[in-house]
Length: 109
Image: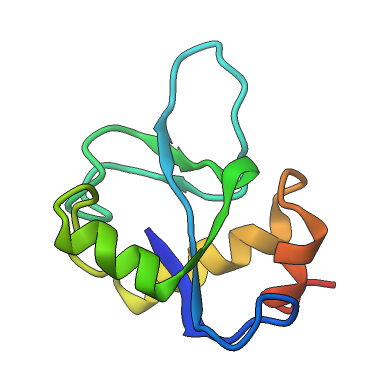
C-alpha cells in the first residue's frame, strides 16, 4: 500500500518516489510488529487480522510503479481512508523495525 508520495526525496534524485508497505496476516504465537495492526474491513484488501510489515518498507520510483501496474505485474487497490493512512504513517515512527532514512522522510523524531 502506498503510504507516502509521490514526492521528491533527499538522496533519491529528481524523480518522484513513493513509499510502500506490505501487510502480513497475524498468526497465533508468531511475534509481529504492533505498530499498526489492522482488522478485516478496515480496507477491502485486508481479509484477516494483519499487520504492516514495516521491516520491508519500499521506496520506489514513480515510473517503476506505473510500469508495474500497467504491465499487470502489480495490482492497484482501493486507496485507504485518510484515517487509515494517518495510522500507517504514524506506525512508521512507532515501529522499531523501520530504517532510519525512511523514518526521516516521515518526520519521525
